[in-house]
Amino acid sequence: MKPRSINIFLLDGDPNGIRVAQIMMSTIQAIAFRRNKLGEVRKTFPEIERPGVYILIGEDESETDRQLSYIREPRMGRRNRVWR
View 1: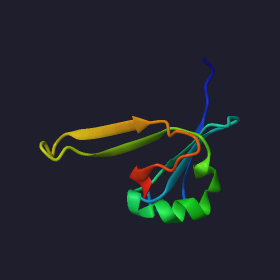
View 2: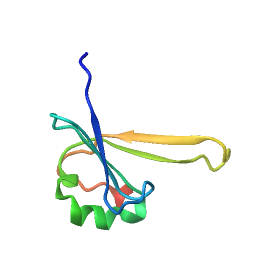
View 3: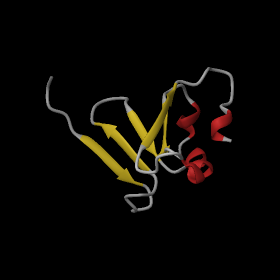
View 4: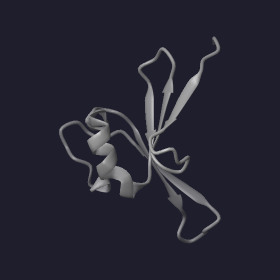
């Protein structure tokens, strides 16, 4: 594999806020944000409605020192209830 650069853009300047990562010379894009920022992300990035994969990350309620993740590819033509 050849070396590549990843560019991370902090939308509001906050490293814990909305972050957009892109691999240079590629169509790959990742948008990271907290769930309460979804409305702002939808307004700013209309491409979020296109096909893709999402990852939800949070604490395990039974073991607070453990992180859980949920990975899914949404079905086309249906809104995902998790994001509402």
